[in-house]
Image: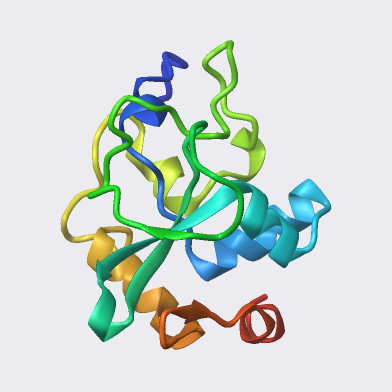
Length: 141
């Protein structure tokens, strides 16, 4: 399946980003990881008391800063912050692995890009609900 450039997926479901995706995007946007995360991302949680988190792009209506929220994997009517007016992705050339394989469907359950697979990639970077950006920058890529 190829992208039809309709924007429906970016209006309905956020694409989760792995630690490697975050580092690549930081370089692509020519921004520090900290500044990029505060401007464009939010922390979603799967199970907070077990450090099961992952990063999602903010919605256009989200407040500034890197905040912890639960979208329950859906935007609820607000599009991804990277979706432009022409329904194209601002970061298409550097979008997440999850986005590259998802298109207008959710990832297959046997892939590492499901909710469970992605939070497993993030768990070593969270400590007591805080994302350790320095550890991320030092270990990834």
